[in-house]
Image (cartoon, rainbow, N blue to C red; front, side, top):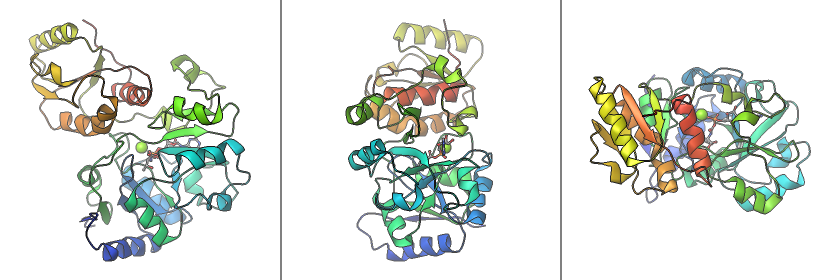
Length: 344
Ligand code: TXA
Ligand code: MG
């Protein structure tokens, strides 16, 4: 299959491109599109054969349910039995935006592959002009996971989608680089207090301001049987080819680590703040100044992918605090590294 990547820039007349995307979706095909978090790979959420194509193209395990994207808050009542009051409040404040709400789904409204046999579904209204236009023209909900091969870092540029899925999907709507760069916060609102299944751009602090107590399980709590989990959490994620090691953001320690690794014959890629540029890594990637977590999150997946294009056989990444959006960054880094830390 030939994969077309078509630019949908702000100023152009893109009507034809949207029509093409809608036609493909109506005819049971998949289409990749940008959101404010990462690129998604979408299919009509009521079309089981189309949704199965998403799993196939990504190589995604079939027991990992998909997020359903909608174009307005009003649509929620079509799909959800009883909308919790806290959910309504959150939608009002954070939608459109990077918040996925897990709620009890009406039986039979979505294709069985979307929910993977669960009685709940994750809904979100994306805050991106291209995604919203597509949803409004299609007038149907779109099931869409991130548009990467399963296990790889999520795509924050259309070219990342192309690298992973060329030949496997017919169309990528290219809306440039995504803003947030990390996937949405997934909040299970079927339990009380609600539990964050995946931290993201909408932080625990922001949620608590609106609905009071919210649980963000720590590593020990995540192991507990009683803690709600996203089915996808058990799988490897966000991982480049070369092994990733996390290291404390301390110039002397990082310098020593690099010297040791190089001495042992390794080629090292370092992902760190800009002031680490001269400490001897074979390849250096930076998001900018230390502590700029928004920038770090926005560029993280692009940087991890860039590390993979080098000859490095080991990737070192300096860590950040788990305050605010740092919780989401550290969550992704823990997964990308499989929890490995480099100690000197
Ligand atoms: O920002 C995002 O959320 C992006 C864009 C494209 O919207 N999408 C995304 O989808 O990251 P995906 O499939 O890569 O991640 C969805 C996560 C998975 O970990 C999945 O297990 C979890 O949400 N999930 C989906 N439905 C669920 C449900 N009913 N209960 C618990 N977890 C669920
Ligand atoms: Mg994903």
